[in-house]
Image (cartoon, rainbow, N blue to C red; front, side, top):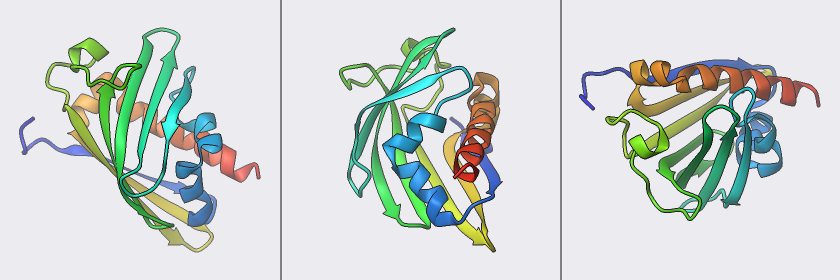
Amino acid sequence: MEQSKKELFITHLFDAPREIVFKAWTNPDQLKHWYAPDGCTIEFKAIDVKVNGSFHSCIYDPVHGQCWIKGIYKVVDFPEKLVFSMILSNEKGEDVRAATAGKPEDWPEELLTTVTFTAIGKQTKLAIHQTVSEEEAKQTGAYQSWIKMFNKLNALITAK
């Protein structure tokens, strides 16, 4: 990917304190309710949210099938910041090529995802940055999926 391409960056305002929003990103019982695009479900084969901890998950899409992802948590700074890698994999946790996983050939082998949580009164401004071209993310639906997942997350945390 050319460095000149604009990488994915999205902000969203949540109607909850950042501690609650942060926990929704790190608690598997909460993640399974919002961390998948509309019409899809997610299963965590493993998740250990701590620095150098890992995760291995699968999003089940009724149209496109399974999408396995694994990664490592690089930063877990409650309640301010999460940084983790995302690598396309298979059910065994082995790396797979982008095309094998249904992504474009130039999709990065590893994405770095940085999520920051900023308190604004009783609300939280979340900013997410991923090391993938924003244009490519929009073409694959990844960008739109983040927006929909944030709406699901907001509904989940404001229902409490």
